[in-house]
Image 1: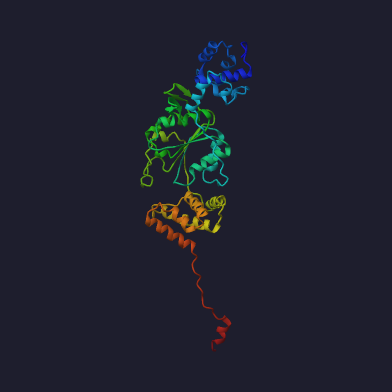
Image 2: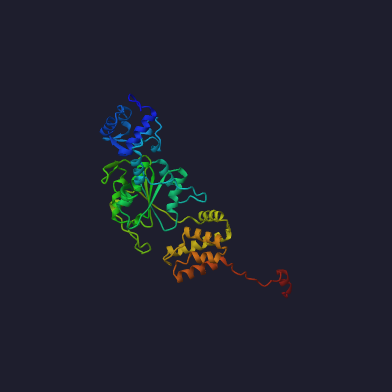
Length: 390
């Protein structure tokens, strides 16, 4: 490296060495001290960048957005040999792969999809709470919006055991060494990704560690002393079967009561319904085509069957329901076993015997056409008139 100025490649190397040593947020004192100890020229190209300065910290991750310098994403290519072991350990400890969701060509948008797509596309921080019965496409809707827009999506499934370490990060054992690992929440913040919190109503009060994050504010990591600023595009979308108030009917016994202040941090709540019969027909036909077993008559029978069951469920007549997901499962089972009755039986075996029997009886009535009533032939009217004496 030249001792009088920084070339573009020198800038790349210097930035990457700083990230490897301090992380993505550093103070001016740290930058200057690092350069001085290594007998490097004054890094004026960096400390003069007020655009990447927030408070007393410089966000190195934003440097390439403010400068034409092509900072490489593979910092191992430019980091010095003595930094590589620490850099590799840091990567193992903090980075989580979060690919863009795969595009599902069979997906049929419905419900709140267009609005979710608009929110994701805007890159605005605007948390959304999506609630609805199981198997009606809540999670798929969010993932497919991200897939279409080529946005990263960190999906975190919540349970009663989920705690701050699972979400924010904590110490873990890697290659025999205890190392700090950043959780998916901070990774999503740093990368400007969508954080999909799935089944959020299964969590406990340990979710309150997300309070400040749900306000779109920087997060101070008390375990490392880092202040993490949410990058552009970061947003939180949560899904749940309830509205965070528990399940009074006992349908979702694992659903928890969520703190009111926590729920208030979601500006909007979306109530996702099952798709209409016409939309569901498109979904089922697309899936059947994918499975290599298209049967439109069978698809129509399944949709009529599910629609009657859902109406009865809504009226309180039964305690179980046939979801869109279960219809897709039946279609795939039919493609595998080539037997409609077996496919339905296998996919509703999880219900109790009475419910299963009632569902099967209903399907048989729908799928079996009523016998035609053959009427006796009637003589022509004129013949009858001829027989009437006058």
